[in-house]
Length: 86
Image 1 (cartoon, rainbow, N blue to C red):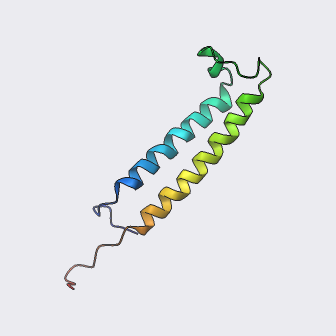
Image 2: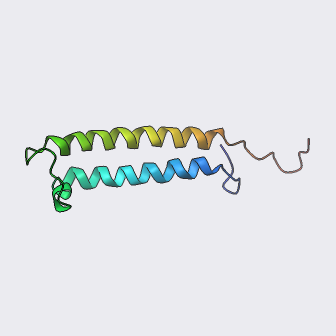
Image 3: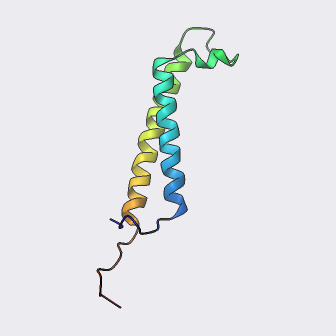
């Protein structure tokens, strides 16, 4: 794993933000199903099916982006120990 001061690629930060955003949207959708209707969008005419599909898709997206960002974090090379030169 990289040291706390070790720079990581921008890809890691993008994946991390995407994981956080999808996680927050997952929780919001899980507890407030009608947020789509608040914006005037009602794809399932009130049955709730679309909301549960969105909950599942957001959970899957959050899990995938979390794993990908973790792999990217671990891929960052560790800094060499103090006093070691190539």
